[in-house]
Length: 283
Image (cartoon, rainbow, N blue to C red; front, side, top):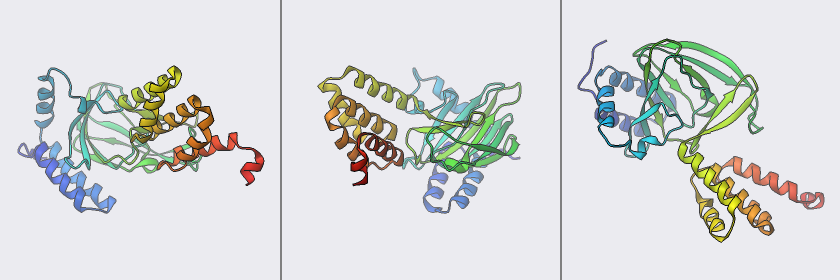
């Protein structure tokens, strides 16, 4: 495979930005992204140049730390926010839990090989925190090869480094359609659970702490965060305010019924069902 040292991150970013904007069909888009990612991976210098530049800084830029995994680095984000380019470092024997993604994606093996296992979700996705999976295709991704990731239940997979050597993979992800977290799965216990970014998890901890502390400042902060872009944060603020302002519980839950996230609306309906009488529910 010929090397293309002149094709680096700027060229990749410009080409991917243009094709994501122009190609609306998801299957065709993923195929084209695979081609340009393979071209970038034939450049055997860009990863070393990126890591060297990162280590010369006094600290990692906060923009590079918005991630659910401490082993990945964000190389760049497109100016329009339509995609990001990431580097993953795999220690010998390391693996990710079974998980989904909130966006489309393509990734390839840059150094060493990676094991990938795809899963099919067999339940109807109607019970929160529960999921039944069936193992599907299992394959080895060798250096230079790429594979695709579909969003949500269509892209559930497991990835791992089954070798005794360190590995590197390069990933392209589209704009997130579910903000701030992905879902992890335990296929032995039929459990689904949220995996959040450090920013999301710290925000949730702060919200829960404010609920515990109480007071007018806490109530104001919770109200302000009802407009958070993160659905889990919005719900925690609704729940916290309902606890701090007990007489406003019904009003708050009715407000939550207008939330854009189905999960928030479902929880609000559950709250209202619990506090309403049978006569009120029938009416």
